[in-house]
Length: 174
Image 1 (cartoon, rainbow, N blue to C red):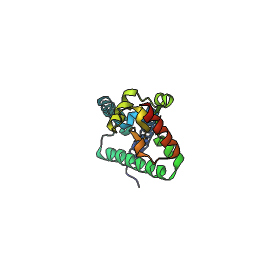
Image 2 (tube, rainbow, N blue to C red):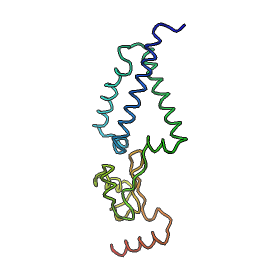
Image 3 (cartoon, rainbow, N blue to C red):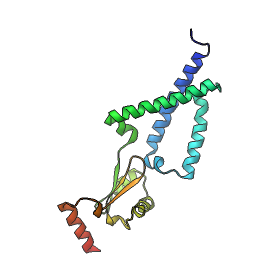
Image 4 (cartoon, rainbow, N blue to C red):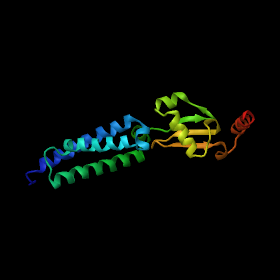
């Protein structure tokens, strides 16, 4: 026979699962830049969000068992999402997204910048962090799924006929 409060604990697990999915979808919709590098505003939002959904997960139950069930449910769901993401490419793309090309061969892809909500200031900061003075000196700049921007200089890539010719044109212009 189950203890009398078992239905309450099952309800907490279900509530927690629903909140987990809603928050996961909300973060995914908000975009890569929101997940990557947290600003003080992002931290405040995260703290307030966690506080606001806590009651939705546990309801009126403030017991140790209720909190343990909520925490265990979150950990199990996170583990399951990671497991399914590892084995299913389509699911992983849906959950994590895909990298977005921002600069290709020294040219900014404005449509990708706009779609990903990346400003020129953010791109220029990433370029400086990678020791690149201007986007024209970048072979590639990619917005990764974690929100960071990776930059490859022409010297970082294996020369092919195309990249070698493009680099020579760049050097002649400057």
